[in-house]
Amino acid sequence: MSTEDLIRSRSDRGTVLVTGGTGFLGSHCVARLIREGHPTRVTVRAPGQEAEVRATLRQAGVDPEDRLEFAVADLAADHGWADAMDGVSHVLHHASPFPFTPPEREEDVILPARDGTLRVLSAARGAGVPRVVMTSSYAAVGYTPKPGNRYAEDDWTDPDTEGLPAYHRSKVLAERAAWDYARTHTDIELAVVNPTGIFGPQLGARPNASVGLVEAMLTGRMPVVPIMYFGVVDVRDVVDLHLRAMLHPDAAGERFIAVGGPAISLFGMARILRKHFPAAADLLPSRELTIEEVRAAAKTDPALRDAAVLGGRIPLISNDKARTVLGWKPRDVADSVVATADSQLRLGLTLPDAA
Image 1 (spheres, rainbow, N blue to C red):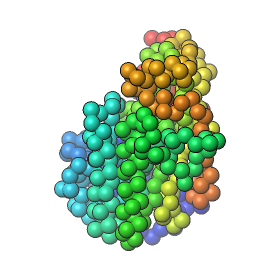
Image 2 (image 1 turned 30 degrees about the vertical axis):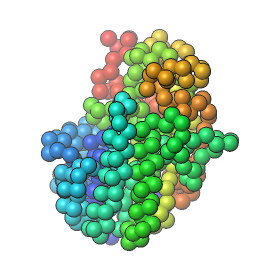
Image 3 (image 1 turned 90 degrees about the vertical axis):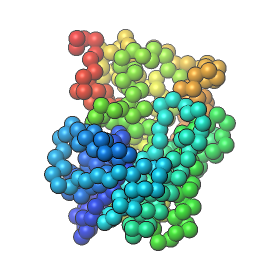
Image 4 (image 1 turned 135 degrees about the vertical axis):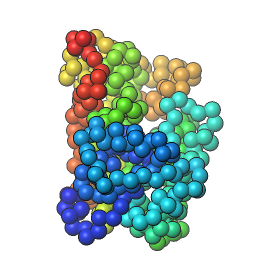
């Protein structure tokens, strides 16, 4: 059954609360919900962020009319969450701290991720919301080595894995806490989506880390790349999977990995970009660091710790569950990479021959 059929089959069009609506995934989610007629409420940490959400929707060509409202609530505080949940029928919880540089203290990432998730669940349960869909991450699934390197929804990253970055640990601990809460409070349903690296069209001026990789390659800021294989998924398909998890009866109590296809390396991504954007060929990465070089450099460069933890392994990441249970059909990985670059060109990125 398609998402559209599920939506048409429902008699209620209650308000959907979206946390993290200013982010890459959240903004796409808000745009999709409004396009499909859902009254949507977005939580922001400060009232000034409302303008950012509206500007992103304009960029997406979406007129919210009277279907968009806002609530001020912060993951780090209880205040505001009860009001945010008032009259809500579903919750899509995307918000989680994502530091672009490693924090001085891991608690600065872990505590708001874990405690904020519990605040959202508690407030939703208090308001009688039947289901919360939480955005976790593949970081909570497949960052602990295992024989065969095959990963599915029953796999978990060990938070004590050597060298695991604070963000990855925060995703494990936040999701574990969410499942513990759902097992204890059986009057609220939980479904979890675990995306791999999210690529696809950039809507606003604020890119996510994955989209930033493509821009860095196209502008020559990554002349070499570490050996690193990872899953890729299109942001539009991640939104689609969230909506399916929000509406499908069989999604309750389940987690779903979002990956578009076989794992790809950064160097493989550069090859895709070279094929489709030959004007940038001389700026794209020309060499791949060995795992020995990566491990040595990671001792002083925190940006390489993720690649060091993965160790050059090629993970086999399954999306069978999302396909079979929810009827999910993701885009091809190459299409997502090209769409990412195309959107950056539309937003003003200039390639050498376009000057």
